[in-house]
Length: 408
Image 1 (cartoon, helix red, strand yellow):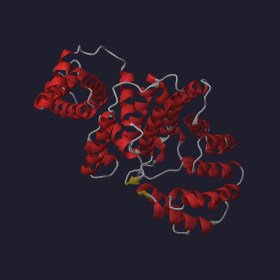
Image 2 (cartoon, rainbow, N blue to C red):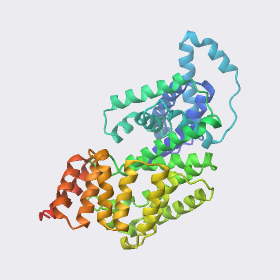
Image 3 (cartoon, rainbow, N blue to C red):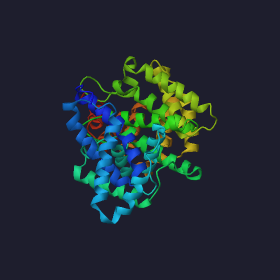
Image 4 (tube, rainbow, N blue to C red):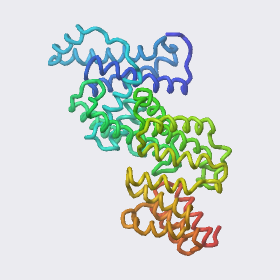
């Protein structure tokens, strides 16, 4: 131990950074993902008790590996059916150093298996790769800790039963697995940037974790343009996070945000990463979404927004990755680039597919308000407020409805 005391925030950052490296080393040595993940979690708990009192070790990752390996060895010795396996492991030399980014990417691939539901893949990724505890993940997604514990346990069992050796998937499978992994990372980011339910508009720790993991994926796969596209999209979107709420924590829409509060460094990095990704030649959906975010971030004032460019980009995105949400955003861009009635006409085609989603009603309300139909906009704002599970969004939509009704 160094003897230097460590503060709680510093300790959490150190453990979060060291956890995936330790887990990768233990999985590689023992070949058992589920037991290794449990052992590393136990080591993390022991570190939270020991390091504040004794100081941080010279090698935090090495300390976690040593403690987790002892747990694994104890477990193997306790199981007589595994004695032969123990002897084989004991005879193997210690693995040599490897790229930390590669190891973390392998763990992300293992946690994002196609057999897992998105919810299970997200939970397992946050625990195994992000170093979050089950309690922290449960709190972030507003579910009871036992429920999240069962979800993670089932996901770990699925990974274990797959019997996949520790290493990157074969090239033929890598593209599909990469797409699934990027989907999970984007879902984590979105839940952090705009929480789907609960009292808070955002959960910054989740979006920050998604950005960190995507940085690692890009470091390990610099030749994959969509990884860079996703990182650029996250940076360019997250750059607006501080301006999305006012002093009271209430939602501020994009066209009313104080753009001086946008993170200029994140925007500059996002533009650079996006340009590097696009230069590779194969443009995918994450790069197109990042280009849309970049177009918004370039506008110094709302009226400077190049809505014609954004509409064209949504048209491309709809061809590359069609979906109701893409079409919904294209309706907004069409209303802003041309006229509200054009957006409303496109919205009419979408409504049967999105009737139960609050966003379609919120968009209709906004477009009706632009078109001068106050009564119709009021009704749609009320309906959107009824459907959303996010309390900040609900309050914002209710205020918009009240203003149209003359109540605010």
